[in-house]
Length: 184
Image (cartoon, rainbow, N blue to C red):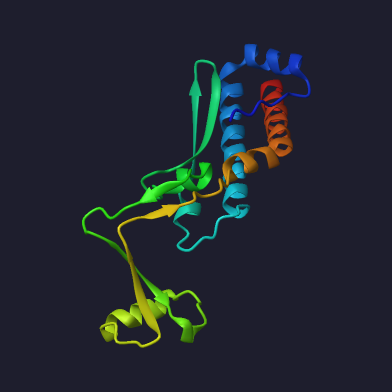
């Protein structure tokens, strides 16, 4: 998703860029850094997925560089930190889940005495310590299961859209700052 910004006084900005391209580029790089950090902070705070470890929030990173066509700022999900991030962001279609190394899948389930509730992580860890002797839990086995898919949570796009007005203000503020630096 590309975000375009508009300067309040385009002619003044063009003159500053011609008079002192170094000062102008320095200020636009700073503006891009502030704008990408703003989108990053919004994306980390406003999302619909359930965070269990915080890895996906920490995987939202920024990068700013000066290119031939201007300053480019990017907000992205670092796959090395959270390789599942793209699936949360774009969702998944329906698919089969099959075992990779074993003959069947296995998972802990609650039996009728527990009221059909899900097994908590702590209860499952206790089961492993007890050697699975707990009477309130049984296990289900299957050669594969059909997963209906996951709903996308485009939190990066949402954060960029949410921050659009603020991004314009940031770039205008840094353009004014460049104007002051050139006029000194």
